[in-house]
Image (cartoon, rainbow over all chains, first blue to last red; front, side, top):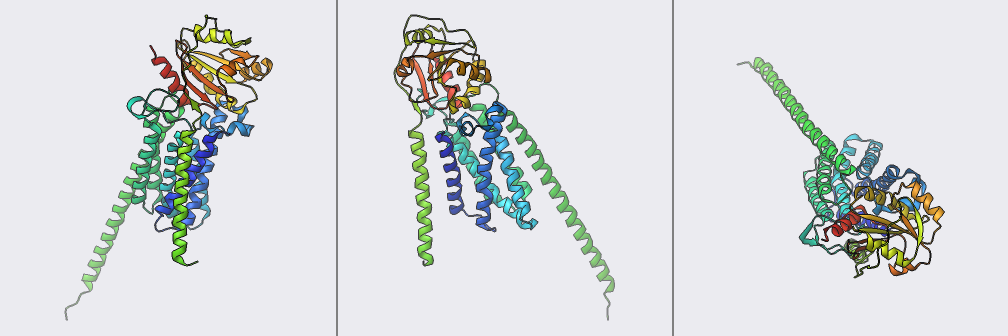
Length: 253
Length: 183
């Protein structure tokens, strides 16, 4: 068995649990968020590996032992999409739309923390390499000191998760789109520096996710602002009418 | 249990969990499946086998192939029945395509039949040749602890990197890049 998989699962699940204890979500049931975060992270990891094997060598997809070798590669964005779809299905099943959306928004920072911990676990998956530099980590077995790109990406995502948690609004759409834009941006930059055999799928996919989610985030912000302004204007118009109607009723005795 | 005691217990569990995580992390880094040792192969040059072939070879022939190549050499010790070998085979095939002309690739089929090896190579479209370690001399010389094992030698036959177990794209690319940096 690939010990990298074992350590990755332990680090991601254990780390998210610790974070949920240290910084519990506000305004929603913690147990609900725990359930909403833990399962999708594991499902996402499995899906990422299965899709990678399907694309790389489909005949191996029915061999469980081949699937367990996570260090051979994962299809990152397939994992994220499956995890997100899983969360959305669970949220929709919850019934109460407003409450469900609040839970989803509250869960997003912890999902990002889960991805950050996955990035940090590159240390145990033999994937934390970057450009040769005078400052950095010397990977076991190599002579050069290298910038640990995976660890830096984990740090960036960790900070982003904390910002998302603080800025978390009851509205799920901006939170989800913001999280996707951050993930896409960090993954894109990391893929520029990670050694690979030429441009990788994850580079192209990260660029696409970053651009699409950023545009969607901006459009959603514009739409929200427009609808708020319209609501404000109609409210003030109604108030003015009320005022006019009321002023007509004033009688001087 | 009183509420205060329960709170202390919860904190204790959280702290123990964090400590266990840190220990796992450190242990994971410390027990990385890699090794670095001084090994320089120097032997009369022997030409590498033709692409997509498997031929038997002894230690002397293998050493000649590695030191005779004018470029860095990636040596992958494998078997068709080994799961991590299957998992990393597409990666090695991609790497061989990417570095063709700059780096030579050589497989060492260990504890397996050439027929099963050929089927495996066709299945994964592996172009680079392999030698069969008939007497297990090569595996013993390379101190192979398990399959797969990947070693990268520079153009002078000096060992740059050795990885026991499945290799990641980043590790393989970093090792090859390091071997190419050797003048």
